[in-house]
Length: 608
Image (cartoon, rainbow, N blue to C red; front, side, top):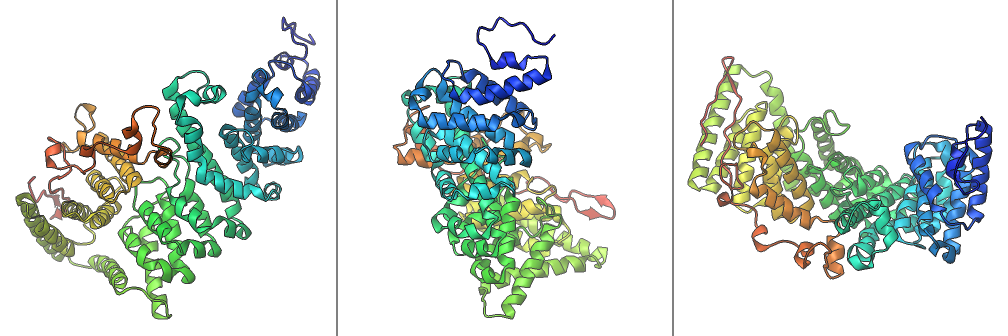
């Protein structure tokens, strides 16, 4: 049977064509369909285009349509929408440029051969026009996605770069995308374009779902813009245009948010920039960017290792080390006991080596390191030397040091319980000086206890440092629940909402898996104090927050307070009165220990 009977009233219907059993006839019919579609003005054209959109997403590596002219067809349809507004407004044609650009992006995301075919088919000029904003932000989103894929491949990057405005447009879009989506869609429900709502929810949701999806798409628009810029950042000749001071300052704050956590976003681009000596020179001149990288390096961000890469490369470079060392060294020292992170298998050893080499370079050149920074690096190097000496130390001597540290720690616990927080912090410091370097679990407790003291003494920087050290010593790294909570509070006090939020969420996750009765979630209920902090930071780290403040703070799902912030009682980090049996925000001194004595594990202390 050469052809299947159909009741379809439309001659040449794409869906009927796809049912053709004879392969050669089907190919000829599809080829004819792609050639003729852009010149037709019939109703219902969006239906086959949406079908192609589904096919492209489901089978992006299938060459059938590539060989039959789909790229030429999609490019022509985008041009038609840009040049013929009457056609665009007719029937449901308004959807077609979006679908066409999305199809191009899907078919070019994996296969360089397909990308080359797309470039030869002339897809770049109409995509650039969409990137300019000739239609709306919805089309910009899929255009920057497609151009980002084309720019990924060595053979097609030059064709993208030949359009000199692409980089500038991508930088502008990365900087303004959240404000564009907020002011053009999110802010006013009654002004939302119908086809935007349909594309966002596929007709399956109301206002609330539209708003959630708009936040997700806005994040993608920004992250895909950054991905396109990242392709240019590998080429030194483009770094001058990328590394403008105002853009570098904004970059660390560009993140995928909780709705797009799989994108490295701004810190990913900074990592690419810092791989180049030219790029490092630009970044080293922006103190705010260095500070932000230090915050990310001391956080639970999935892309923490990328910030660490940037800091290490900046210190290793003799031309930038002297500019950044006083800011970067404290962060690297806090991380010096971490083992595995990202691609690093012995990160702590790498950090020690880098800082040691920096000290040697400082001694052999005119570059200066502050006295305070030198003292901190020297202390780190001494601690590593002590660890080596402990390997040859008699067990009896180690037991004496352990017991002495324990006695001092218990004195600190007693002072903490009596309200002498400053005295407790001093005792924990003494205990750390006595405690063997190899007793990692006990050092985790001591650092975490001292971090709690610093919180109560209103010293958030010191608390963040100690909590980070505890998290690096812990196995697995970044999973000590009490230290996560204490660092979340420290970041809250410092006004760093994103970092506080990530730590608080990870704290809740650790509580859900903990066997500690002070931490385990009772009846699967998140502690009130943790829930309040998460809600507070979700408002403060909301992707549209800056745009909402700039445009009047109108929040479509609530009153102005939803956009501007939180109630007064949420503005302070929690105190002992705000929890019951849980390990609350004021907390109690931790007494976990796992020291060995004559081959037996002994609990040297009781819960205070």
